[in-house]
Length: 424
Image (tube, rainbow, N blue to C red):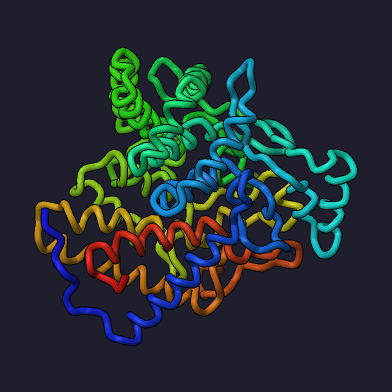
């Protein structure tokens, strides 16, 4: 379907602001990378996540930015993650760090003890962190990495070569993840803080992880077929159909959203965005967008859950660090930026031209709003829901130059600019 230009076009002031912020965010993304190691969740040297490769953050950034723009940085990042795959279980690390992330989360100057202690104890040798270590869960790492490699694969010859070289590792990782599935083919999460919303105690059949599980099977089937493994491709395609059917039956709610957990009537905004992008028709995706507008949209963007989780379900360590509202209440700008890609999908493929025009307008309006927010307060990790201000607390400071925000913003910019709806 041919993309139509935006009507009315953006004014010159908005065009100029978009151009400036796009250049700034791209430059900041380039600072998140150490050659031979990978990309970090923040470009801020004083941030808690600097000098660390977090698997889920890196996978998200790959799908939005690095698979299209910087394959060398992505190759180093994925190689670092796969270098630390456990040889017996084939588990992938939650993160690989060169400084203690837990200690860098401490307030004030205490965080700088992390660098000294890491150097003293490990001699600057990389430290992989797996599920259950440092109060951390990591059961989403396998599907996240496979989706990232899949995006790398379809966008460059470098990605094809990488997937060929690491195919057996990916296959083993997927087989490991399959041991977590139930007879209905859905992944059953057995440890708390298993996905990106890791300050909240959540187990069982989670919406976000199972949507990504389905997408990882689709990507693995694609790679297997093109790399010359037809039997594997057929098996993964069959699994993809089985998992997708169960996701739609048990995790997609008739009121047009993806559940946070099977059997629970709680909106998971991120699961709904990924589900609309990967699994739903344009008509269904438009219905999900209407639900998100009605239930989770706030002046600063989209909140993560509705209704929010009670404080009794917040992890102890995040709670004492004053993170009780970290994933539960604050707005994460990357989520709103990611949702723009759903709006673009609807604007390009919905059968109704009126709906297509509506979502063209919404995609650009949301992008312009995020542009103004970044121009005013930077690419924040978290912001207050009702005011565009960093969600700093007494014990925690929102990460500045947050990679997820930068990458999702650039991902939306790349698509909107290619369509001619915003300046390149």
